[in-house]
Length: 607
Ligand code: G6P
Image (cartoon, rainbow, N blue to C red):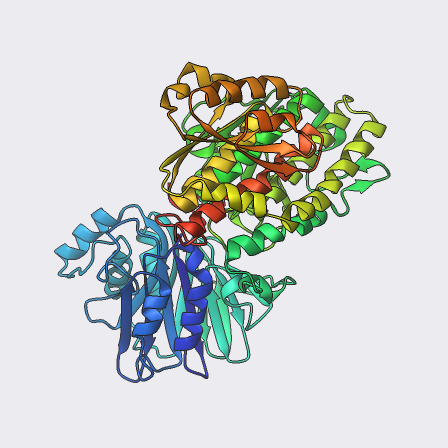
């Protein structure tokens, strides 16, 4: 949520900042801006809209200089407008600031600062940081930033420059990601590795309340009381091409096509001597055996991965499992005992609600395990153990390959718990693992021919609403399918248990109302077919995801999208793929930006 970049070096900063912002745009895209210092002043250019608007506004002779900061915004305080776009400056315009996060006490701080004569030019919380630093500045930018940080409550990743200390950028953070790296051309900072990976693969992940002082040839690190320290260097080994579309028209399609690899990579090394291995669970088998309740918490797509896992953990390990959206979990008083396992699922590893829920659960004595896609992310750092999904960087805001990575990881966890509890035998586990691995090929097969999906997508032309229905794991799969459609095509879509149709939603049906059904072969297949027949009788048009070879489905479905036969437990992995593609096709036909849907951001670092 909001992306920040900074560069100070021996070449012009402008293009480096703009390129970095393009790569960070998934974090927010309602406005963007850069500030670059020249000999006498800080030049700021800000624009409403996507980074491309900013790029086309910055002329060849604008913003020349080797030190600058930039920002792409997802508005929280203050509407998306030029005056609210970052960078923000002090009264004397000699200090410029970019910020990711929320300064919760900004109103009190603003009142005090206004009382001391500061004039504000925006409605943002961020602007108080610029004025606080101005107020504290006595010739040492690091000291001034430290003083300002000590007065701010909330979350912040901050990069600050000051015309009186040319070529210097001071950085700090609390609960907002910051990475730094020294490249050949100079020193870099960003909210995400992806913005600096072209320059260096050796990065430093700044921790809360730490400070960094960047100059063209070095970056110095200080703790909260001002002691210098040597940071730990993290080497990045993934490929830079994750930031490119690789011939696909959009990142979403590229990422959908990466899913077979994600399945394979997530499973690699997870079976040893016929047993499931998840070393990251820092609990012995004996301790795991004591687990008598599991909570899975997450938001959005990650929550949906949890819904699928609940079915598997209860089926294979017989442990009662609850799935909760993190924003609710943290404000309830969930029953947590020392034998409760909490699994926090988060692609970005920085979702504010999920993080708060983790902290809360740990205070209450639970062991918390994170499932995340981002190395060194707050979820990873604050959990008792972390399982990394092997999706690699996901750029499209609507999650696809990360979801598959999460479901596969949670499936492994369910199998492990089943083993530990003595509910799954070795041969059963071996067979399950092998069938789980087969889903990679099955996804490849689905991706080979998407004509039936594209055909069904045409039906959504002019539609404003749709229902997604299924039973059991089909229902869980529908929640994610419906979310994909509404996120990227803006068509209202709701998921329902098929058996619940007659208790309300059936009243919505009229001629041509689209129903997407997950109606694969499962123990409840016949019941689902009956529910579809009831809907068809009332005029619905049925688009069914069905098992290859199922001819009967054609009696009730107007459009059939076949997927290979698969064990019901693994059906969500394969059935989700046509649902992702369906949503994308509908959105593309409606002219929507599938990678950057309106109002959304890839990581939500505010409550
Ligand atoms: C945002 C994204 C969703 C994502 C959710 C949870 O809403 O737009 O795609 O599922 O956050 O994010 P997380 O990073 O915690 O999985």
